[in-house]
Image (tube, rainbow, N blue to C red; front, side, top):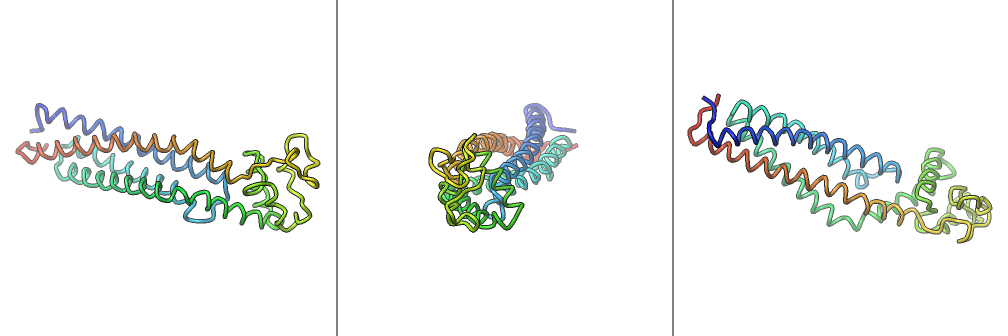
Length: 238
């Protein structure tokens, strides 16, 4: 017969939390795609370092999605092997997420440098590559910024060596800044500090979602272990 009493309640809790994990997996997949799209809107990503975080989120989301489905089946059928496998896999995912959080904290100071290098690299190809030109123009227009750190960065770029800047560096109704850029008619702040501020603002959203998912994962591990212990103690699986 199936598990009874308090353990039967644990069985349904495991099933319920696995359904929550399944939704969390979908949320992580959506979050990974969203972060990747936002980064693509901000910088032309060409390095693994810059695109690593959203890829990790996306991969973890897919794994959680399938593990949750596996755990639901194990809890519903009261299968010891499936529940044990689920608990082990979920614990590994939990540890990976902790490691990723620690790594993100350790390397967070390198992010501005990566963004700075990427924008300066794109600026060098502004005149020769129409795709890069379009992307940088959209970036500067979106963030109301100019250059990497300030508008004078453009003075060292091929095609702008006569102390000129692109049109997207000009403040509204100040198109004269193209040939005569000044602090009055040109966006003074560079794109690197603007993007850094944007990332600091939105990282709280990512951290909040990650903490919520980690909390449910921890509860799932606890309930799965309780179910495993009950089954092994003598309750018969269906």
